Length: 196
Image (cartoon, one colour):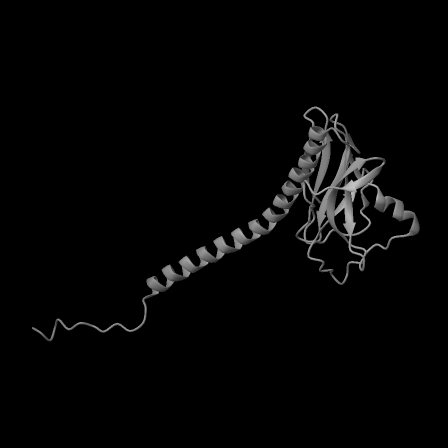
């Protein structure tokens, strides 16, 4: 009787075990791919929200202090690339840089266009100063030096902002753009997402 109850030695895995393991691996792989693609898109949205909060903060400072504020861009002297947006205050017939709120550095290789005709800023706003080979910087001409010394956006203490349609934030790696407009009824900046 002992000879008939012999236990078979199993070598390797059964087909069902292999199918279950491969199904688990496929599910994990698709969830990772999905979360990575969403996180890359989310970083652009969070960058635009961060810019909107910063502009509203500059506007609140203008209203609280009762002074005219502006937003200027800082340029790298060597590459003539815009590296940051800086708040300035109008004092004794000149624009002075202010430390509060602090400068805004744009991340994720983004750039900003100003005005209704979306005339591009006199350089790209790239905070890490890494320039792509196919992107050429716009050189400043003599007529642009006046633009460099005056702000692109004016924030008045009485709740008025000029220009009304302020700017568009774009990124080199995606077709998604974010426009920022002044909402006079609510006295704040509103952001709209545009997908090309």
